[in-house]
Amino acid sequence: MLCAIKHMRQLKRLTDMEEQTPQVREAYESLRVIREVMDRSTRHSTLSGWSGIVVGVWALLGCGITWEMANGYFARYSHTQHIELFVATWCCVLIASALTDYVLAKKPAALVGKHVMSPLGARFLQAAAPAFVAGLAITVHLLLHGQLQSVWAYWMVCYGAAITSVGIFSMRPVSYLGWAFIVAGAITFLLPSAAGLPMTAIAFGMFHIVYGAFTYQRRQT
Amino acid sequence: MTDNISTVTTQQEDLATDFARTLGCLDEVIHQKVRMGIMTAVLSMSECDFRFLKDTLGVTDGNLSIHIAKLEEAGYLEVRKEFVRRKPHTSYLATPAGRKAFQSYIGVLERIIATAGHT
Image 1 (spheres, each protein chain N blue to C red):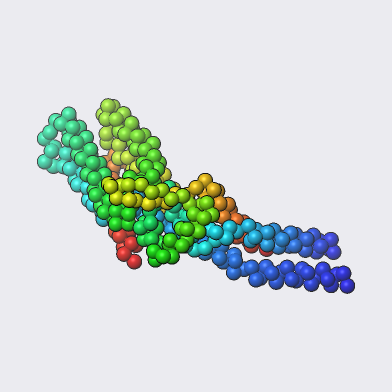
Image 2: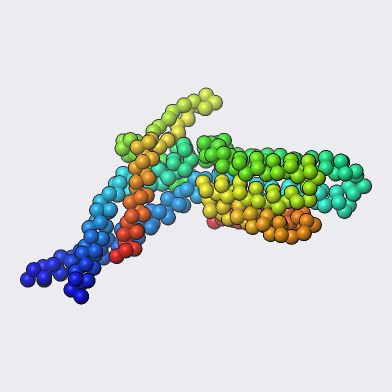
């Protein structure tokens, strides 16, 4: 008798568990909703579709000018002039990219009542800053020691690290973009130095354009 | 053999009890789709305004106001009113209690899934 009561109680508990299964499904659904809202909340603080594409185009232009330095119109310039032109070109690419992102991200952010320089934006800057500063320090070191030909892989790895850090607070594709840069940088380290510039065009140019197109298409649907 | 069956049964009973207890821990204030969305957005952004919440969650003004009021009543949300370029601007921030409640809510969801995985 006691045994039967025990089994009946056990059966009731198991039946309760069966009834609670929808609640487990609900728990999964709640976590999915939270992830989705996080994605939607942070989308105005990262590269928008168009800014990704334009930033990619700036990078391709930078690569084009650098290519001309060695092989085309600027080949007759002296070594010092080459270095000055290199620094000027990539500073312009950096400034143009930052401005593009500011202008193209400001409009959609303002439409939903959010300012670009929000607390989250400040957190993004904090997350990205260490890798950017490291990249800058490495670039200065290579510039002073005349080893600029190996700068590309360092840029990819540092930029990838910065983007991956930002990806912690943002959408998953941002992290994927960061990892793509890190992998591209690691591959560039293994390749001959002549492959550095084409790899930069692929990473900073094509990756941004593909990411931008993907983000744009994702937000349209 | 009987001992083994008895041990397994006891373990199952413990898990069932644990599961029921975990379900009881779910914060009813947060455990609602819109309120959960508001808390997620506010905590992701540190602070956000009404228009941003409306756009992100895709809800009506009235619906959003009701849920914001409930979170405010529970002491999970703080309303900050200020003037931006001479225009009134209202933004919402999570209070320390709201932050703590949301963290434990996530913890409970994770425990529900983990407990269900063991049964």
